[in-house]
Length: 292
Ligand code: AAT
Picture 1: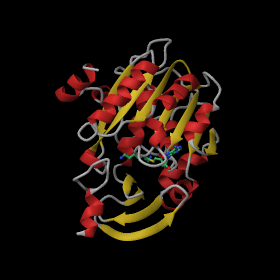
Picture 2 (picture 1 turned 90 degrees about the vertical axis):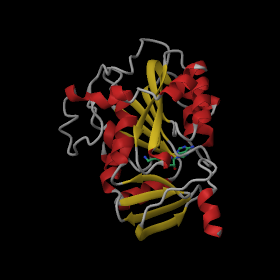
Picture 3 (picture 1 turned 120 degrees about the vertical axis):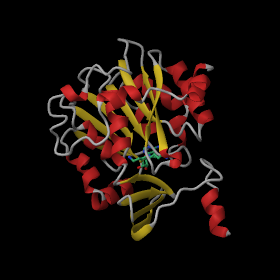
């Protein structure tokens, strides 16, 4: 009974839980910010869990990391400066590295333990940290952005955890305002934006805040990630006022990018068709988004 209570009481998805069979617990630790757990599952490879919530599995991380990076970076021509918020496992860095136009990648992750654990257990993600263009900052990204120079970034990718705990601030208006300020005119933001099945209100709130803050355009896209709650994850993708950005039809298609596909690791999920398809919304969501 006690364990049932814990499983079904997550405020982000009350009344439901998803389970994976644990073959072996590989690491258990507690940082200043959260509980960190790594285990070997019987069907999804190794799994990284923070405060009881699955952040990634070896089998399906490709879907999330490839989409959250290439949706924004393939929507603008020759991105050069990119900021990653969160993303301490390094998977997002690994994907940004495919873009040879990129000259500087800043990353601000709050929890050093996530980085250390990823380097030890998920080398195929942490490899992203080895790129010489990467500059690592340990700290709260909301704080980091408050001090970022105006107009510095072509793209900001918010690969953060759910808004309970250290990521709470990252879905609030002041955060979006500092992100918009740190982007150049016509720059893009791509934000992890939860599940359309579970978090319609949160998504609506994020969209209306972003419509006030980002004067270019604001879109919602989604992808299937079986180990995230309800099996899908959304992305809120916005541009600042400036040269208009056509998010649905990538102007910088990955198939034409020198080296992007020749990278040591093949793309497993993303391609230009998946990019455009990700913006197709089910009728219920379309209605809710357009009613805002
Ligand atoms: N790529 C794996 C997916 C993640 S990881 C989210 C990261 O965001 C974590 O490493 C966490 O420590 C970091 N983080 C949380 N809050 C902050 C903050 N304020 N500043 C900087 N980094 C932060 C996300 C999985 C999404 C799960 C969907 N259910």
